[in-house]
Length: 118
Image: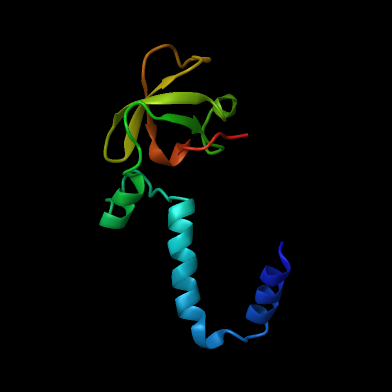
């Protein structure tokens, strides 16, 4: 953590920025939405902002399955998107594994990451 960041956190905890808390919260949420797109459960309708957070997903894009996926041996599995639906994507795994053969699999967007999962 940088020195300026540590000083900011101390000031925040001590109440030095209380008059600006709403603006800070709005800025932090906006940044988090850009860096870590959230995904609602599949049964909930998507609002405009959530739809836009999924917009970058496209057919042919490489993705990885994240730590929420089950079975656990699928964590970090690389795949290519073959179809994008409203709340799900269809994937073709690079290395078919276990019961997931060579055919496409449907996957909720909450289980994928656009950056490699370690």
